[in-house]
Length: 136
Image (cartoon, rainbow, N blue to C red; front, side):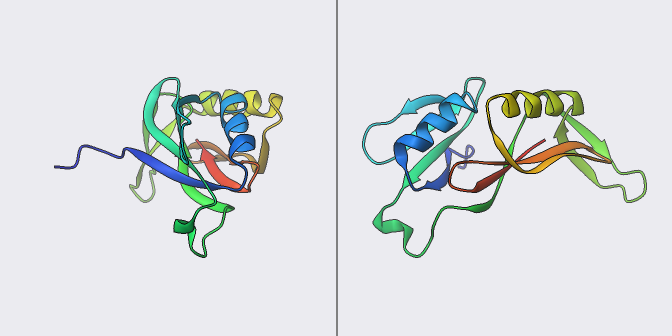
C-alpha cells in the first residue's frame, strides 16, 4: 500500500553549499546528513527533500531548471476559476507575499518575481544550482 511520498530528490553540485542554503535561506531542518544524501524538511513537517550531490546514478542528469516542486507558504485554500470551473490549491496570497519578502531579505534569488493570478500569488525561487521551485 502506498502511504505517501517519502522524499523528493534535488540534484546539487556542491553538497555543503546547498545544505547551508536550504537550512539558512529556506529554514529547513536537517533530518540526516550522514553519507551521500542529505535529507531536510520544513520545521512544520511534510515531505522530505533529498539533496543528491554528483554520483554515478545521475547518468546524464545535472542540476538546474524547473523542478516542478511547489513550496507551500501557508494553510491551503481551494480556488475555483469562475469561467472554467478549474479548482486549484494554493496558499493564501498574503502568506505567499510574506514568504516572498522574507526570502528576499535572506538574499534568495527569484527567476520570476511575485505575480498575481486568478487563484492567488506565486513566484519562482532559484537555489544556488539553478533548481527552480514555485512558492505559492
